[in-house]
Every structure is written in C-alpha cells, then in structure tokens.
Amino acid sequence: MMANLVRRDPAREMMTLRDALDRLFEESFLPSAFFGAGETPAASLPVDIYETDTDVVVKATVPGVKPEDIEVTMTGDLLTIKGEFKSEEQAEKRDYVRQERRFGSFCRQMTLPVAVDGNKATATFEHGVLTLELPKFERAKAKSIKVVAKQI
Image 1 (cartoon, rainbow, N blue to C red):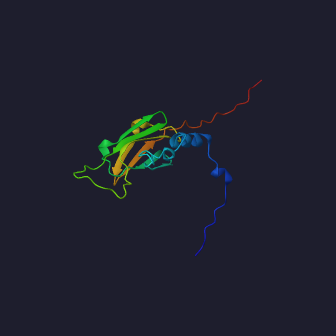
Image 2: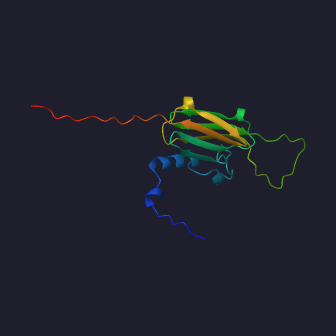
Image 3: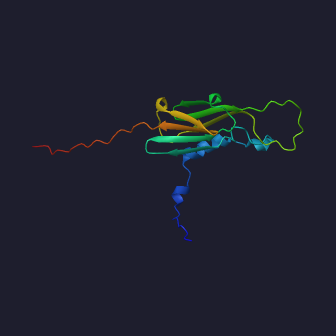
C-alpha cells in the first residue's frame, strides 16, 4: 500500500476576511446551545458549495421537505434557502425517550464566492438533496493593445 504525500501549504489553511465574516454571521455571536436551545433547524441544513469553470454549484440536504415547499432567492451575491421541516401529525400522545429530528422553519443564507447570473440558474431536487447550478457571469476578456512607436 502506498501513502499519498501532500505538501503542507499554510496559505491554503488561512481563512479570508470574507470567509471569517460569513462564518461569524452564520454561527451568530453566541451559539444557540449556550441558551439551552440546542441546534437550530437552519444549522442542521448542511450545504456544499463548489465552483466549476462555468458555474457555482450549491447542494443542500433537505430531507423530508417537498420541493414545492422550498424557496430559493438571490439578492446580489447573497443566496437564501428557506423552507420548513414539518412534524408528523400525532394521532396519539407519545412519551419520547429521545427526539432528535428537527422540525420548524429554516432560513440559510450564504455569500457566493463570485458573481452569478440568477436569471439562468437551475434548481433540481432528488432524494432529499437540492442542487442549484448558478452560471457565472462571463468575465471581460483581456484585449491585446498593440503599442506603436510615435514617429517624430
């Protein structure tokens, strides 16, 4: 068995100021567990965000939520995903030994790493995973300007 060696790059481990501020606002100033409330439904909405050459892709896990009950909006570079984890109707009173599934509204907001064209965005939903494909705006292409010597 061969081991893969990866060169350590300290610059890759540093967080940008924007990432730090996003993290600060996403986690709030004090965690909700500090007040005994436990994790909020929004915190239990895990997301993956990655870039391809043409798109920013966001995948959010929203089990038990119907696609028509999910609202996705974009304001500038701020992406918002809203919905609700609905509780099952209880026909009888239950004495739970443990109840860990989350119920209630969620609203997850995140700042996207690059400018995207929200008008061309697509959203698909399969097996409890919401996938958003957000096309990047085409960047201005570099133009070559020929330098000509001035004739005296």
